[in-house]
Image (cartoon, rainbow, N blue to C red):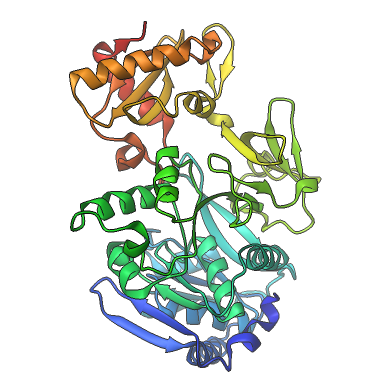
Length: 480
């Protein structure tokens, strides 16, 4: 797969389609060939506006065929798209274009020219795009996306999941997130159908459009389970998802084992994967090699190094990103080391068969008053399977002398709560002291599905959860 030759793959494809469903539910469909015509017209518009190879074109707009046409048109010109999230503030347009060095800014249906007297761009030949990624803190970081890294990830994905013209992919996350553009390029290269739908229309789109593969965060699959169960006596998951699904991929945050097992019990292949916009994909489960509870086998075992404490370092010839932009150099080098190593900030371990289990984020490590450090994700894994537990999140007690568990029971009655406390106590008996849960606070709803406890990119904010426990600690129950 090569971006330079992408249009040659889809220009004459009149069989494959791109579908756009807007927030009102209106549907628009065009062929890949018609999309190529649109892209070429956009390229003409860009050239007429004075956009040259290496220039930066800002794009902030909702998911649409037009979004794709600007992106693909810029690719034909050799310009770079700087993709801004939908909520990125643009107050003073001339000041905004000058601050970001834009040759042109696309805001929804409007275009705004940049500075015509700007100097000729000095763009690295491997630079493809400028994007933003939010980490666990929710703070946006600008990333310079690599052409080679993009091509590498797409090639591996096509080979590992056998993507072909028989496939149909549904995208409901913003195209400003680079993962979604990887999926777009993948579909155009292989001749697969592509459906764009806003999140508020995604469940109707699933059944109407019949995708063969999906990519989404854990909260989406939790919602699928809940809605499928409520619909007309319980619609089978496969039917609720359109009846054609070959596989679904979950990533971006840890998923509950109960969710994985529920999908598996109904014959729907929900596969965990792990990657970063900084490095690209690191590991994934596939249809042939899948071990639930792990994020799969390493895609490039030789590119991964484990530090003594289990933190993963990545060093590959073609990482997805060339580094950050607009960030202090010292801060940037905490992730992108001068020697090309990418520091993930994630802890993990490989089992004897080569499957990777993530233990948690470095910034989430709990330092106990004893001086011992524990990974909350690893502690939580010990309690998977305790009867009656729908969700469990581990945080330190305010004094840091022990661990607390915030538990959502499957049935919030007194008998159920007592059984859960007993079950956690039995697991504690087989654990080292620093891994035991000392007290339990019950929550009627899972915190992992509550936006108050999620970061901007739908990852659990353990800081917010710890504050929640601290406010309610008097209601916690000791575990004997």
